Image (cartoon, rainbow, N blue to C red; front, side, top):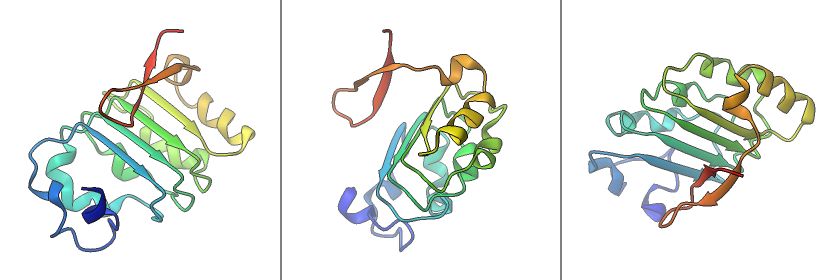
Length: 141
């Protein structure tokens, strides 16, 4: 999947996940996109998506496409320096979202983002790597 789907902004015809019927976890790293609208061709897959982790997407400014994912439980946004507190407004009140972890690179913005959500959604957690994936899962301290 990684080699064929690296450039999400390009054609999705060659992407092996295009014909999948269920996607539960998604991790994107180092992709240069200002928003995640390139995921829209995979809309059918996104209905079962529960966890999204995005890292080192320095030009990412808009996460509203992820806010439309109906089953989203966990969202991690790391080293996405173009995100602002306003970028997170679309996630407020998401019906299934249980945890939002982030680091946008500015303490003032991180604090403002944390204040937008209930404390239990953004509290500091310890992680373990889920076997067979690169996803970090919260675990008790």
